[in-house]
Amino acid sequence: QVTLKESGPVLVKPTETLTLTCTVSGFSLSNTRMGVSWIRQPPGKALEWLAHIFSNDAQSYSTSLKSRLTISKDTSKSQVVLTMTNMDPVDTATYYCARIVGALGIDYWGQGALVTVSS
Amino acid sequence: IVLTQTPLSSPVTLGQPASISCRSSQSLVHSDGNTYLSWLQQRPGQPPRLLIYKISNRFSGVPDRFSGSGAGTDFTLKISRVEAEDVGVYYCIQATQFPLTFGGGTKVEIK
Image (tube, rainbow over all chains, first blue to last red; front, side, top):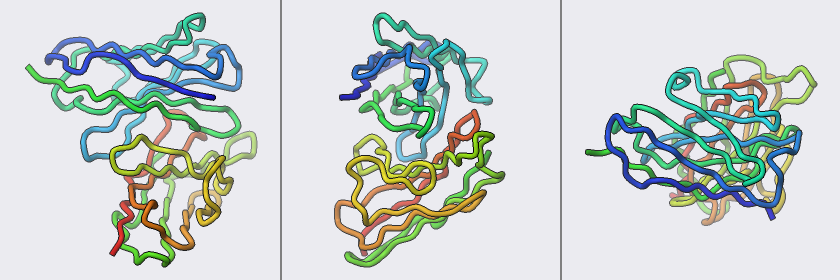
């Protein structure tokens, strides 16, 4: 059974750095056909893709947020970590991690983690 | 790649069909010959759920009243007979090329 679970702070202050962890089970992060993306959704708004990490540790980032994002993984721990620097209230959103399978696209999603940015 | 969904909102009578369009700013055909256009359903308060992948393939457990079609830059999701549990927001997403992009969403609601 494939599962993904996001964890991290519920509240961060403006200018702080956000660190989110996605813990996966039911598949390996070393599987060459699979990778993990982070996606966010501000309250009442649409989904926005942020970043992706491939099995070989290659990364891809949102063009508009690239300077603020870093994605990494620890295969032995089955974890993918996203950091976002210089947080602002407009970054308030539910942050999801999701699995991408090469022949299919995004298939499984985590439940999401709501992060509020406020002083 | 920009994905434009229409309509923004679709009020539907129970048992009636619904149709959502997704238009891409460029062809979604990958160099491997596949088209990685998917449809997601997001029920209120829930994470998104995969319905359709590669234009027309239903994901595991998805009812057959959901179908996808299209090619190149124009794609459609159809619900043959809307049920109460289908209420939510539907998104198209392309995974042909990074950065991945989503459509703006279409809200399906019951009249």
